[in-house]
Image (tube, rainbow, N blue to C red; front, side, top):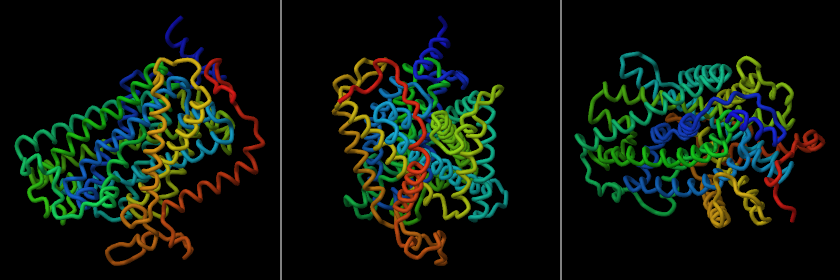
Length: 504
């Protein structure tokens, strides 16, 4: 029996036939998850937030977040080894907690993914336009140009996803290689030839105020970077030997992002000429590199970052499309018949690709900057992870798993699950806390001239924090749809013998 037929037969035990193409090896699976995390994307976007809030001390948020997310990833790795089907959080909670719970888990995670696609697409112009300017191309860094580039990016990744996971994997593998190489090269050249700070910079605030509150704000860069590792589980039906390879890719992507990102952050801090001046000027990695190397090297850095962000956009959309397909295949979404249809030649769910592209475009209609979309996207992701961990804890307390998968936490599963829930709950409170830096109201989102950038058209709503509004709207729309339509549909709940949660 071949490896491929074993994977197909394993999938058939869950009641599904093989329609997507199994072409991903362990590196490709790792690369998709790593490029979803994309340390260069998040560090480029929010380095200045951490630096201006508490100076060099903000780097300590990186290992704290990495450890917290690695604990979450351990639970997800075990789940991916038990349930190697497309849809990650939706599929896992379906087998752990039943129809209603899993549907809401999938619904919230679907819109979290859509908002994440949007947030990264609108981040690309922040690196690309300054790179064009440094190369002598006159492109104004306006909201309209940022939105235009974001729309072009969204269209390009949608087309690439339509043409198959093999193309996506090729682009991802190449992109991850150059992202890692670029970050390491720039980091070590700075550290060896252009270090202006000593290692104690990581203990210096540069005149800022270090409190519990400011540290929690500074954590947002790290929190925005390290998530999406479950993508390797989402692509399980396109991965060879997913029960063994998906867990490796999930954990490897977090570890790899932590190491590469940590080296890069530390070397960036070493390359700052004057810490108080950098804080006052809101320096990001591009400013630090330009101050040490000049415009040509800064342009090269920005192009490397732009490539990394593009690959990040691609992998996030790939993951979200597979979640959409997985839910539609279970008849859990409006238009499921079309969303679940897989093209025989391309082996991709084309309608799901187009649907995710269109839905990711909608937030761009009222574009208020990348930061606002990132707030909504990241908060929704962390909520989805908590929902998944609650289901996992409930199942463990009832005796799951009855049999070990290739990757198993054993007796460590329950305590790690509790720690993961405590971590995720604390960070969700941090996200949802109303503050102008991380969860502003629309009335607080203004340009330098005081013009309102985000307007929901209702005074009462404009006074509510953005993340609260997103949570409530997604939940209400989902509740209405589920009550009127979805709860009357039959559920696909088949689980192989030994994989079901024991009856209480």
